[in-house]
Image (tube, rainbow, N blue to C red; front, side, top):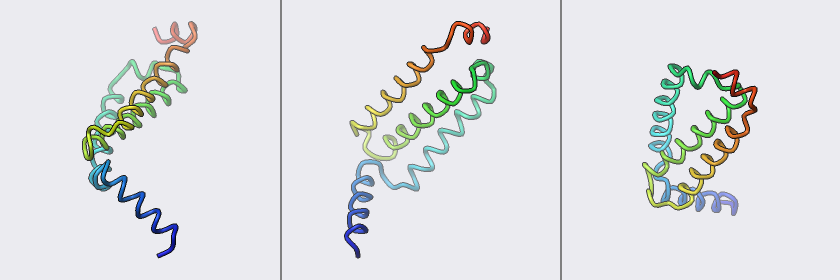
Amino acid sequence: MTKMLKELKKDLDQRGESYGRFAEQAHISVSLKNIVDLAFNDSWTFAQLPSRKQHVVQEGLSMILHKISRLANGDPTHYDSWKDIAGYAAIVVRDLEALTEEEVHEQL
């Protein structure tokens, strides 16, 4: 086994300790995202956002749900995952606060 493959295996083993088995985490992540997608399809408020804001909200939620699935499947005290969730939420808040007054009126 090459040095690179050994390092990769070490990294994957380490992540497995924090996040659990990838196949199980992926199932949780996709399930959570499907639930949110269904909710958005029925949500008039989401559709009122300008498309670039929709993308920020969607991706922010997607990343937060991904991190939640890692916590649910692995170590729920994994500090970096909680920090990442806070970071993604802060990015969405910052972007939504930047809506122009015109964009706000278009939503009403």
